[in-house]
Image 1 (cartoon, rainbow, N blue to C red):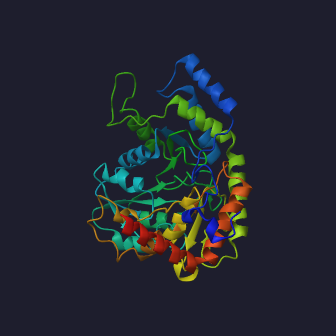
Image 2: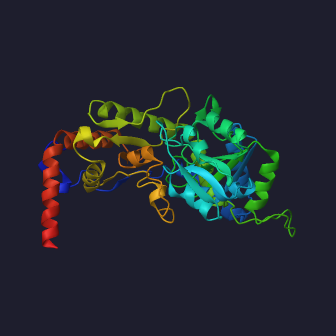
Image 3: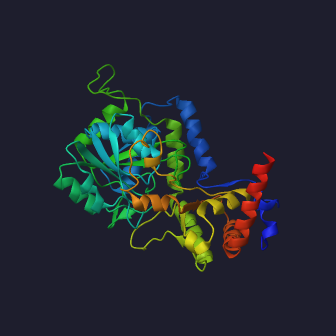
Length: 404
């Protein structure tokens, strides 16, 4: 445990962790059950095209969420594109800028213009600002659930109904979570989940679209497989978005350990909460306890006015210790290509503020209680010696610039 500035790796000492500790390091589950499933795939030689494991995975997800239909996909980005096309979206669709770039890119890739909306207190799209952005070209809204916490589903639903808009949800962070007692996956026209390797429940690479609409589900299945309705009859514009059997094998294995993963995430969250509670200027994103959460992310807000050290400086120090903390979702979609030419700065002040403050820390089954203690101790040391650390960092940069 480091208790002195001279022990910090950023100033030349040995890093706390010999190997990099990443945000979103994959959870594996039972290797034995996974390998058994993979062997069955090899034995049957059914590798893709709606195999038995994909069918089982879809049914297990639908049962778990209490939703009528689940269509698995090769990844959530393709899932968003298929859902958007199936819902008939075009023109402009309103989304938050504070999201992973895939939310915007999925739309732009199919010639739909993402219109960026600001966020509210819980880091999700602000319903009160949406109606200001609706134009004659607006066809839909995509709400994004973040950190295992849901956006304001009811308010978004009311806006969509009032303006005759389609409503989708990017639920990449929200598998296993609920809203007003109902599982995420049941809202809007459709919801899209990610089972990417970095998600707490993963299928190596993959995703799923869920809906309670029979007609939409049938269209999603057609579009997910080139539009085929039989061996040689194409009845819909489609693409290859299918999940493979090996991904479904991993997905099923993850589902079997779902409660264990959530329990570990919650225990990690509670430990971070306890060990960071008395550090001024560090705010841990909180959960009110009234819903189901997956506790997938440890999200800090760094208030430089109080800590006297910036989020980026703290990240630099943690990276030197091999703690690969992440600046989600810096700098915001509105500041990335190809969207930068549109000036959103005055329209999304909360997004601008948050992208300079958020830092996400490692959690999951690969992070131990001692790891968390070490991470929190480093943060505590940095905040307690912020002024001196800033001086040293500045001096280091001056020397490096002079040497170069």
